[in-house]
Length: 196
Ligand SMILES: [Zn+2]
Image (cartoon, rainbow, N blue to C red; front, side):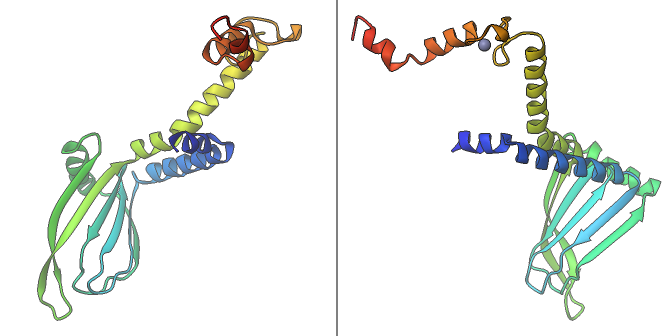
């Protein structure tokens, strides 16, 4: 199962999709420095409310459970201010592990009739550098592999193992053929073996 997933991931389509996603994340990362972007999903009373905040290299997700009053869908963009930036950096970069941060706490919200209600609030922050690195991992390794194969074929080497030989001479790479023979003997070699 793992091997099938890996070969699917490595397929060209998946590589292109991952590379595009990585570029989009880098764009969000760059925008996160001058602008604070907040987005929230709508929630009815008793539902969970999800909020995303992107700011200063961090994407922070907040889940407020069991909201006591309806929450509207929201999107806000504001320019950065130095005191907010300093506070944010202290919390998410100063007191975190390379931008990773999580908290399971509670928050007071006003209910439908104006009463204060204490509800559970879970927040976690993920740094953009980590998301970018994860998305770019497979495309970057595939790109490196393709470049290596190209370099080998241009320099008269076997594209699989780098053994210096001239493919123009025809036949198969002596190093690869020897290795394949060692790893997986063909049925014919077993038949002619004296033990069999
Ligand atoms: Zn070879």
